[in-house]
Length: 182
Image (cartoon, rainbow, N blue to C red):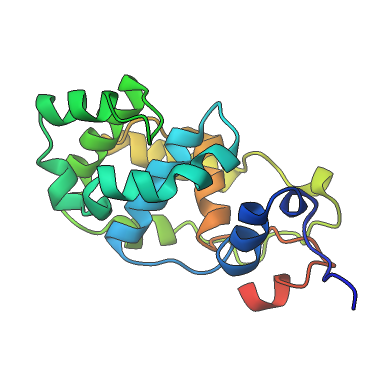
């Protein structure tokens, strides 16, 4: 039996394979779920995604399951608690951004806002070289998020979010998951 064809980045670790096959590029909606993905993408900035995948359950525990109201209520003592938590990425700027972003997201509508930038007609990449790091859509999404007060979300982070939650389908043309993400 042969292995299914996957995007080239997905074959290096079991966590990558599971994430690729079961999550990446599949539609995610709901404010708390989108907030989780946005937060994790921000924490990933400058790091390998495998680092975040391996710490994801710790992040969920440390950030109250990414409940927007719960994280928005975090204060200075919570930031210090998180800075001491070896189970997550201990970066003060990213932790403070997550709390600030939750406060901005309290008004609701984060999922709806992000989904306005869906690009179902994006080109189908044939190779990893065909997958952009950012697009005009991710630049516009990042600009709108920053204008609303979100932090640690530039065009590259916005594009990673768009890929992760299905706003674009960047599975390669011959990837077995591509059709499942339509």
